[in-house]
Length: 75
Image 1 (spheres, rainbow, N blue to C red):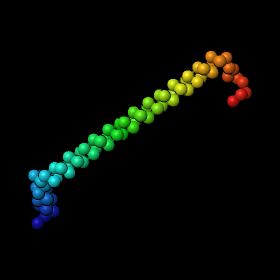
Image 2 (cartoon, helix red, strand yellow):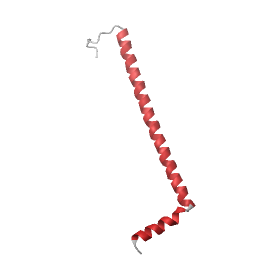
Image 3 (spheres, rainbow, N blue to C red):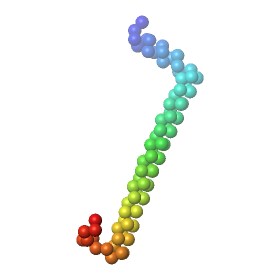
Image 4 (cartoon, rainbow, N blue to C red):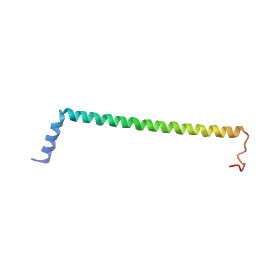
């Protein structure tokens, strides 16, 4: 029996197998969930960066409004 025959026989055993279908569905579900979690993590990081940028801008604006001089050696 050739290797191709063995591979074909093995594939045919699982085509109608309920367990194989359940495993495939579970793998798909896990991939989808991981993809969703990764997207959520990226969104959270982006929102955090925007929040920090706004906070920095507000601090700089407040610094300017206080009449502080950027050339002072207070840093």
